[in-house]
Each structure stands twice: as structure tokens, then as C-alpha cells.
Amino acid sequence: QAGREADAEQAAAYQQQQAAAQPAQAAPPAQSAAAPAASGDDSIAELERLAALKQQGVLTDAEFAAAKAKVLGL
Image (cartoon, rainbow, N blue to C red; front, side, top):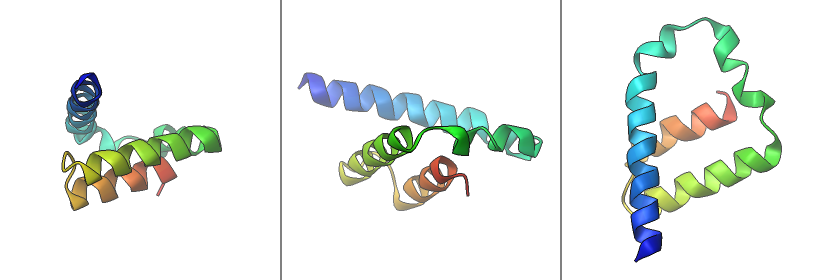
């Protein structure tokens, strides 16, 4: 049960981050250049976490696709 609570907290934090990032998407490209600079292991871990949240029904297909694109720097 603690794992579910942690997943729910992660999902809530992710959704808040996404909501806060929506207006910032018009920001200069310099910010988006930081995303690909993350190590491959970090990106893989983040993609696995997002996939787990999607599988649990926490993220919709659209939210997952948007988050995946952000992690991949697309």
C-alpha cells in the first residue's frame, strides 16, 4: 500500500509539474536543450516510471505521449 501511495504522490507531482510547464512551452529553446543532456539511464528510468503510471491508469495515453516526448527531447 505504501507503494501505491508513493505512486499516487509521484503522479500528483508529475501532473503539477506538467500544469506548471504548459505556459512555459513558449520558452526559448535553451531550456529544452537541457532535457537531452540527461544521462541515458535517467531517461530510461523516467520512461519506465511513466509507463508504470500509464499502466496503472494514472496517466492517459495523451499525457503519457506528451511526457515521453518531453523526456526524449522531441
